[in-house]
Amino acid sequence: MVKEKTQHYIRTSDLDNGVIRVDETLKILHYNRWLELHTNKKEKNLLGLKLTDVFTNINEKTLLRKIKTALRLQTPTYYTASTSKYLIPIKIDQIKNSYFEYMQQDVRIMAAKNDSRIVTILINDQTIMANTNKLLEANIQKVKELNSELIKEREITKLHNEKLLSNSRSAAMGEMISMIAHQWRQPLSLINTLIATMRIKQELDLLDKNTISKSFTKIESTVNFLSETIDDFRDYFKPNKLISEVTLHQLFNKSISFLKDEMDHLSIKYIIDINEDIKIFTYKNELLQSLINIFKNSIDAFKYADINDRKIEVKVKNQETNIIISIEDNAGGIEPEVLQKIFEPYFSTKNKNGTGLGLYMCKTIIEKNLNGDINISSKDGITQTVIQLPKNIKQNEE
Amino acid sequence: MQTYELTEDEKDVLQELMNVAYGNATAVVADMLDAFASLSIPNIKILTVNELLQTFKELKSTSYFFATQAFSGEFKGESAFFINEESANNLAIHLGLENNEDLDDAILELTNVLTSSLTTKLSQEMDTEVSFSLPSISKFPLEDIDDIETFQQYSQVIVIDTDLNFEDQKINGKIFILTKDESIQWLKRKLNTILELLI
Image (cartoon, rainbow over all chains, first blue to last red; front, top):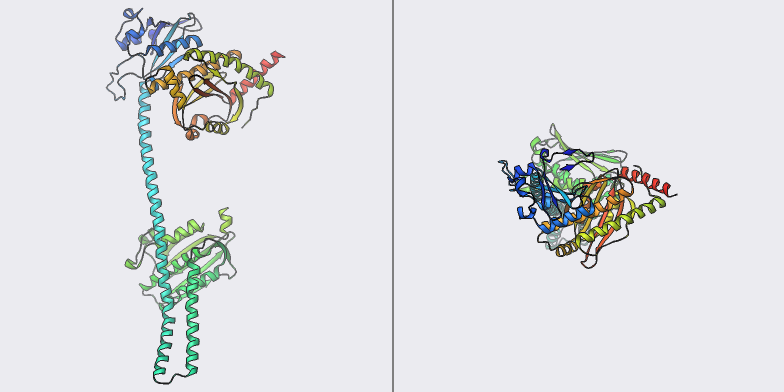
């Protein structure tokens, strides 16, 4: 019997637990009704028998050690279901799915208050809890597996993005070569004409010193122009990771100068409304590359549009900590379904001529490197690109 | 959040009480394992949870068995017992254990013996009673200790930290007795009552 402090007795047959009383030699002194029902063994047949002879699965050495410790400490010792599974083998007959063949038990070994040689072993059914734990463990395992898959996927995406950026750099390089070709076509043809003229005059014996001198001067100045063009491109396209003060007006003029020939050829008017004093601290070359990319897109759009009054209009708003750049073209606008995907990598409407990386690169540069924001909208044949940039990227980074 | 500190006098009394409790615990553990055991003089301090987690990290071993056991009553809290893999293996050899589950069980037993002998004796000295929950065990790399939510519910903890040594068997472990704010307050009141009786 389990005895309470108040000296009242609880009948162990009323308990929903197994109760065994044994002495320090493991002789059974009491075996309650719950255990009788669960093990199909009667108390009257067990009294006086050694517990480990009745249940041979029990490690006698361990049990004796726990009993001795409980008696010595006068506080309980334990078997836990999570490590020891069970003490008394009780088969589970439930139809319900279970991970376990035997009832999982938490066992508490308590010294009797009035006898220093006797302990009460209290058995608690923990099968439901153990099943839940097992299920949880299986789910945790599943989550861990999914998580590691996710990490792998993320790595792949990262590599993919790095590759995209590297591809977009190659694409920018290609654009640059095509722009240099545009810029060089006219001066080269001028040099060619000058040389051809001199050659003809030489054959006709009409080449005088004055003509030679004039031609050389023209050739020299044209070669200088070619050289400057190369320097400009080199300066603006070499990876320059320094933050510098940029006068926006100059930066726009520079970007337009790279594209001027093509714009003139397509009769595109360039209108800029900007306070010439606006300066920002940022990565100059990266911003220039992005602006050129946006202008280039507008120019390309005009190639396929039958529009008379062609123009690209730039406005810059000066705010307290930011500047807002708006670039508008009237090249016919963009279809909503195209607009949705416009910043996706490898998305292009230009068939073979487009890499689909230009605007993807712009967004990456503006948002990740320049701490800014870019949005493109289109209405009534007009496309507007709005870029917001911090005036001082350093302050923003801090 | 209120912060608590133990005065020098309070620390002295607690140290004395702990010495008695540790004498008792050492004897029980030695008896249970049939080996000569020694417990280092306990180091008592009040720490924030972050400081406590840092202390755990400083144990700096890749793999630890870690068992906890809650105790309740007027003086309530949780004990945390750390034993590294090598010590755990030596314990298994000493006890002639056959498998990992037996080893887990032995570590839980050791945790239970240390927790109950320490806190029972301490609570007896302070004229109160404690009851114990089942201990539980986990094995994890120490870097993950921040994730153990059980510690996060404490704001400040009294840490009673000691090393358990079985020299011949090369087994050593570390036990922390952790109590929450209200038990710290209770403990301070109790220590002061004992102090007044001594004067």
